Length: 119
Image (cartoon, rainbow, N blue to C red; front, top):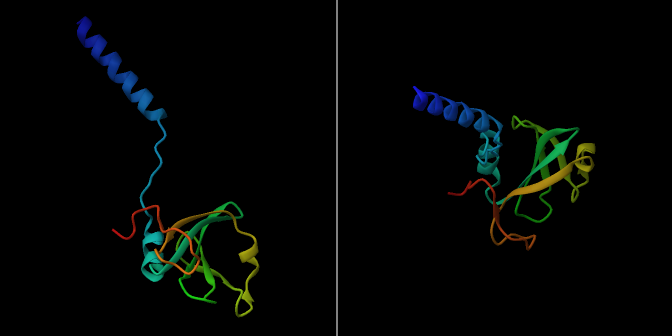
């Protein structure tokens, strides 16, 4: 009986401690996978706009500009500085992190693949 009580208590502690653990989900969302299909020869950044997650994506080409997408993949902004089409959202993005960048790009930056999209 004592052994069962000890085992039961141990299991309860494991469950309690496990519920407090914080594990970051490092898998790509469907939106990121969809953006990758269009921008595999480019760059995708995850940013914040008014506290919400948005994505800034552009192709690896001169004067191509980039597009802003909401969490569902809906286009919500155009940031084409080369052609003068710049929506106000473009200047309001914060906390941007590159999550994908093609190798040998025009920006001279290292390749990035945070979510393993090109595997």
